[in-house]
Length: 211
Image (tube, rainbow, N blue to C red; front, top):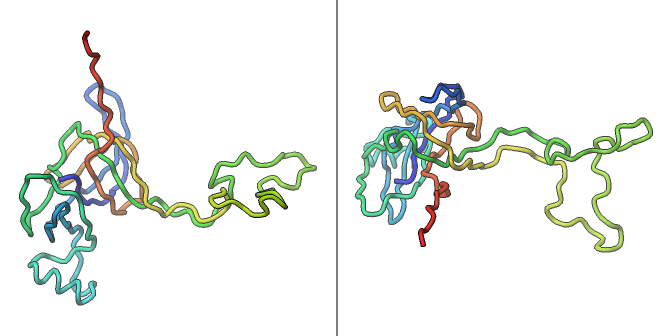
């Protein structure tokens, strides 16, 4: 299987075997029961909730499966050639120390922000004569093309969007508590939900071909 659902607990730091201090993100990974098995994907659930907090169609869906109601439902790719059964649980032992993963989550929302914070503009002159220290300034010519091109960097809503951080290393797996310690930062605030997938762009060392 390519991934598992989890919750970002927070960040801390640990010492590696080479005595180097590294920052890590603590993620509660699973347990995630399998809700449905499809051709290329399996449907997982995560984080139990009271049945009364769900709408009736969704509550009946879990009742039919005889599985405790879950707050998050997502699909992940399944491993070819392996059989999965509804009700089977996926746990943190899906990964091992040294694996590389891609973590997807919703970034922190920052509301409406100006261009200098949102796009790192340099800004105008800071002298007394200037009247455009942090303003937008000119955004297009008047006659040709006579409009503002789409995608132009402007002030606007910042954050609260899906972000994926790739090639993060798993430094510790706690099977008793379903905890993954992943080196580096992952998107989202504390107690936000994330998806941990196997890295798809892991760096591969190419050996020199002997002539």
